[in-house]
Length: 111
Image (cartoon, rainbow, N blue to C red; front, top):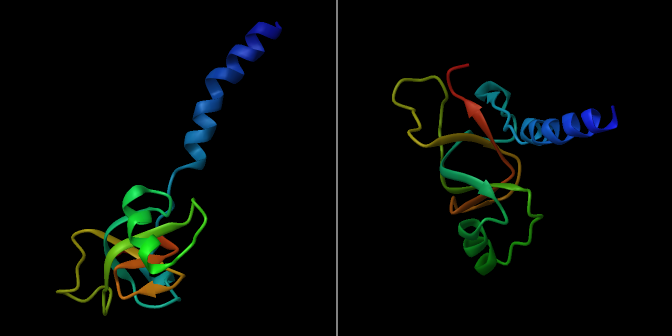
């Protein structure tokens, strides 16, 4: 009996971990911290590419903080001509001239 429970736990643990790592996507209209940004990528602050940009700027963040890299604002969501071919995000933290933007969450421009 105990072996069945432990086997079930061992197989269920990766599923629980994967469920916690799923990024959430919000409608762009919910971004009330500034303009929606279009970033080439969104990565954890601890990733090598993010760390190589944050270090010279003197920015120290926790390893799990999502940062947008090479971002530009999207002026008006929903208007023709304002699109993002990379990753549209809503960011809650500091913007370092678009090179790095802190606290970015993916958004859906179609909502």
